[in-house]
Length: 394
Image 1: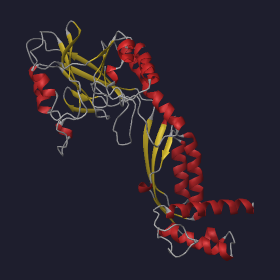
Image 2 (image 1 turned 90 degrees about the horizontal axis):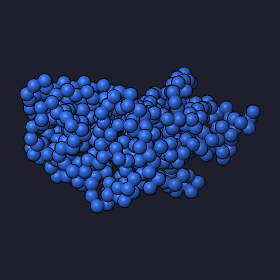
Image 3 (image 1 turned 90 degrees about the vertical axis):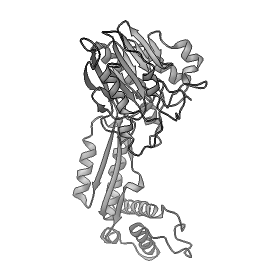
Image 4 (image 1 turned 45 degrees about the vertical axis):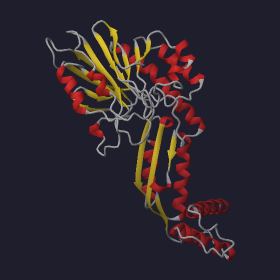
């Protein structure tokens, strides 16, 4: 089984403390599911191609819970240090807890080169020794290899971006895809398992990113999988063997992007129904972007239904830069029958909420000038006023 980027210990700022605790636990829970899948599929071993951990500053509780989950996996497990959990004197791999409590069937690929899984099966490991390598790490390891014994299956385990996905050439350590293809063509290795890209990706025949088994961000494509890989060496001589790769979905959480235009009650109803139809809501993280024009009553209704959905979703993330809702019309304010100073204040707030303009800096009663959130604050105040006034009328 090929997997990678478990990112155990990951945090996300948009999560509430309650959701963050469940999100963190899920990154350990998936290890057990991976183990069951590996056993069910008859895998000889599980290969984790880097970033097992999000960082080195993990609590003993997190480490022990991870090791306990690994202890339940019934086949050998091989862990490759990546950029987030690279080797070094302060790394998670060098802690006394890791050396004393690592299960016997779990192995850290802490040196480059060949590691024997069993006779006839080898892993060629390329661990990260630091966070910012200045050159390709894979090529030198492959250059030092001799040909495998006839009938031996050899799997390359590496971490990092390949040059085909680094079009802007920003990464000095990008892995040359041609070198990987050449190694497969010559029979030096028979499969290339990569980590670092959280989206499941087939780079070329026999070269795969497994993606993260639990998703980590909205931009990912096809995350939440593990790959069951069947490899047969060539029947005779050197050259490519036969490789069959089967993705299996293992994630419990999902990231969903919802971008919609809302211009009235029908659009609000449709959005409400769409959010209500999401399965497993407490494990769904929604990135919401809205644009359109609404009356004040409609805007208040929208906020109320979103608050209701937010209570049951894993998260409802609404970055201001992805929303463009405009307040329009006077009918819903007029029906409140406000007069005098209050009516004048409402008009000032409406102007700010609808246009985003700053108030007169000489007006001491106005919102503080120069603050970028004045328009949002004005909308919130108007919605609260509308709800209170309507509630009082009833």
